[in-house]
Length: 222
Image (cartoon, rainbow, N blue to C red; front, side):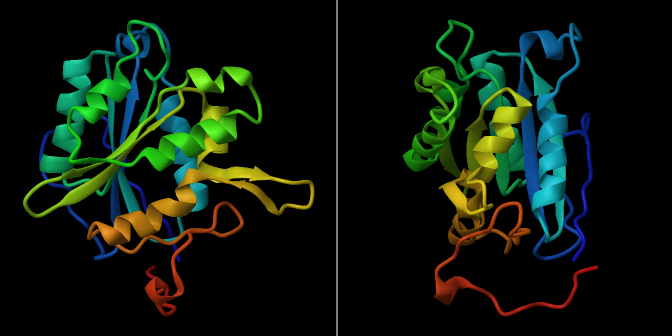
């Protein structure tokens, strides 16, 4: 199977065109006042794209947004990506700490149909293996629903290393999974909300589904 990606950093509003029924459309949102104003180069979106390229074995495309750390802007961007672009999954990076300018969790909850607290709990559990300040992280995840569509929105950390650890999880010296990463649960969540069937490379992160939800092997999507 081959992974496909379309990077559209300045794409106008409009529904994404799927090139395969099981192609997942992923919105990537980097939230930073300084990066969005050109003070420094954004590293969150490139890190996410690189990781998705190694992890996904089924077709995918991304739509990207680099925005300021402002609650109204964040909520509007998430709403656009789900309601207008029809993203199945939206991953944000940045703005989840305790400072006054960190408002990503509040802006995400403001557009939610239902919260998914397990994602935040697991992200902090992973990060606590490295730093005690992981308890200061306030990442949340939610489902946003429209009349005919739904998407999973997940806040991720701001640092590329932390993004990778959070998504993949931790392995011991023998390569066995020690602490599962959050992405292991994402494909089945997408199934449950009516999205495409997402598959992963197990050596990076193994998607978990109950046996009755596992699809028979498909021919290479090419």
